[in-house]
Image (cartoon, rainbow, N blue to C red; front, side):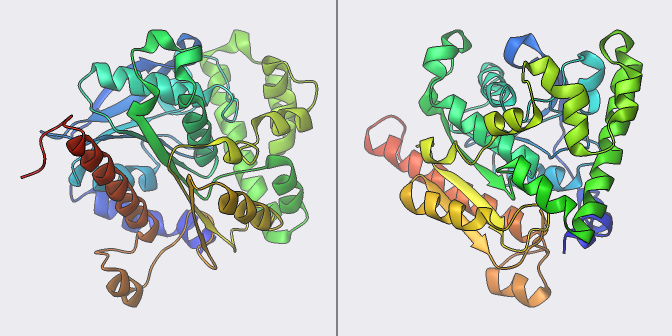
Length: 350
């Protein structure tokens, strides 16, 4: 499922996108510390909420068909959509030499983007979303939004306006999962493929910002671990890669989340250490804010459904995870609208 999604399903995804995407407005907004972020923004006539989302460890807005399908479907259901190239990626890369931090600063980026989307006319509730490493970033965004009044009161957005979010197959604990990957034949293949993409990203950053990167260090980065060792941890002030992974781990955030959060996770995901699953289940059982949808199959950001499965769930296409995400968002948005109506904050529908 993982290999098919990565290597084969994109053709079908782009075919569906060719049937019509939102008319996105490309613009540069700003994240934490004033870091510029390249974004696509689309607003329907009367949006009922706003989805802010990004992708995984590598890629850009042009080639991330899964993210664009999510944006397409969310827009059709009445949401304003803000998609963005996160730090060091896509068209954000030429704008700044700032590298990734696996959520430590990207969490605040999500909140900054929500505040600017609000100023541009996008309404609450704001929902934050991502998949793979982007799922970890979204979890950090939800976490940071809970205390925005303490660290970002100048943003002109209230904590309650950011309702929660969705993490599809999120990275939860990098050190254990990388060790697991390297011990597995298929895992080593996937890790090397990701590493090649990371090196390409680093070479592009060097072309844009030669004064900020050492090309020799880029050449030494021959694994995800060594990429972080050579290029990331020094900039962030960490003494070691394990220290960095421990600090950025999303697993430790989950008990602290008190906003509704959907985590869609497959037990057969080949990128993550399976020993994380019982820990994830225990945390979800102890935190009513977490809605864990743990499936036996699905792979990594896969969940390609057969026609019988589509008929069973009432889906019009094979993108099972996208439809579960949007159904969950709709339920959350409807609950918020009903609560506001009950308190006389908005007219009751109809």
